Image (cartoon, rainbow, N blue to C red; front, side):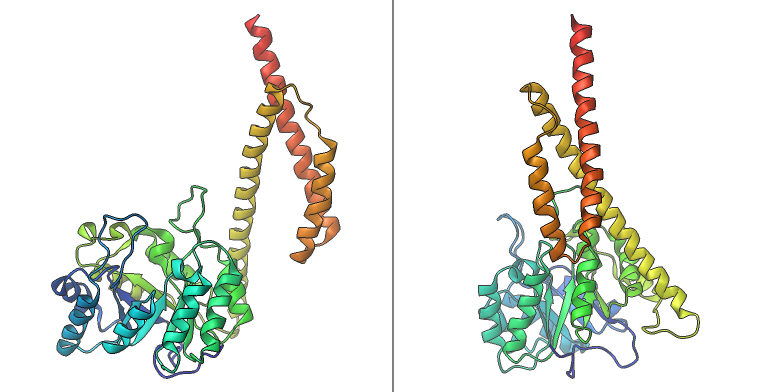
Length: 365
């Protein structure tokens, strides 16, 4: 996958690529008031044209009317436009209206059939195409979508990190899991990678910190949602910032050096340590979730008069987990030591449940 191209790719001065605009194009007036104040700050204006919602009944976009509005506004103040496409028909209309950059959304990336159809529709064009990560943390799907587009001879490719859905309750709308986009970037270092802090945070209060985090991790740009009246937006109201706030965020961003220069290795070490902190937090959250499940098992065993230690289950764990670890390039001895620690804590937790229920029974007599 190549990063070569004329429009939509990295800028020569190493400043981040900036894409901003409303979640949805709601009207020509809304577009004008949302984007005209920021045109001097951004490289592309984004706007949702087709907005299929998780459940029907909400605003689902203005369709081709939105493309007409954008072109009307470009007559007043020229700008480059970016939209999401999900079907070949979307691609046809986007090209008809001279849209400058297209992206494929998270819900489309998970479907290889849909991506293949889009790749066929885009074949022979030179429009930049960016691919958002799939909803769930599956790097193979993300890579697969990019590879399908590359095989269709689409040279101006990029990736957008918008976070991943999880059933665990976290501070994020979509958990960033920074190690996944970093792994993509490691494998394809020339591929432009930008961050969508609006969808990761799900709250306008998190946009600045997430934007800075992305730049600290050497992302190549940002896609941020902005609306002149975000509280009354027809979609994703909570995560959109006002144009004035967007300008503040852009002006306050610290652009890091991409390579070592003098003492810059210290900053690099800080970035790595922050990634370690994030990884450790995710490990601890996973262990906490495991302990909650162990408590459920303990309750079931106690209620059904079943022994805590199940040798067959323990043997199964000792057999299967090292195989999983091997695929992840983890040391076998380390894995077994970790499993023993987890098993010891699991037995301890279930013993506490048994003892607690015994005390309750005796007090009730």
